[in-house]
Length: 252
Figure 1 (cartoon, rainbow, N blue to C red):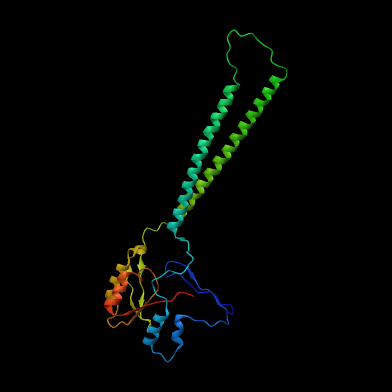
Figure 2 (cartoon, rainbow, N blue to C red):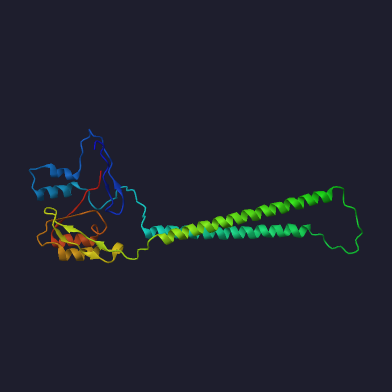
C-alpha cells in the first residue's frame, strides 16, 4: 500500500494511535537500535530499555475507547429506561397541576346559588361571550387530552423498545483471562495460565503464575505497559529473579 495507516495499541486499557510523520522526516524511535547488526541481542535489549520512556511519570494523552461490551450496553439501556421513568413522573405531576387548574375554571363557571336575590338582566352580548369562552376552553381541554394520549402511546413504545433491546443482548456473567507466555526467539509457548477472575485479575495473580512458568536463566522479559506489569509487585519479581523488564514503546 502506498498509504501508510497509523498503528494502534489497546494493551494498556486505552486506545493509543500513532501520529504519522512526514515521509522525509527521519524517524527516531527506541526500536531503531535493533537495526544495528553489529550489536548482539543483549546489548540491543539494554539499549532499547535505555531509549524507551520510563514507566513512571506523566502518562501520554490517550483516546479512551468507550466500553461496548454487552454488560455495558445493558447498563446504558437500563439508565435510559430509568431516565424515561423519571421523565414520566415529572409529566404526571405537571398533569396534576393542569387538572387542578381546569377544575378551578369549571368551579368558577358554575352559577352560585343565591337566595332571595332579585333577578337582573345580564348585559347584552355577555352570555354569548361567556358561551363562546366556555366552548373554547372545552376545545382546549379536548386537544390536551388528545395530546396526552399520544404522549402516553409514545412513552409505552419507547419503554417497550428499550426492554426488547435488553432482552436481545446476551448476559455474560463470567470471564476467563489467558496470559500468553512465549519465547521471543523460538516463539515457543512457555505457558498459558488461566485466570477465572477474568477482568478482575490482579498483578499478584500474574506474578504467581510467572513464578512457576518463567525459566531460571531468563534475562529479559518483554511485556506491554498494562497495569499488571507496572505494579510494584512485578518490579519486585524482576529484582528477585534478576531479569530486565522490557516494556514495548508507545507510538510517538
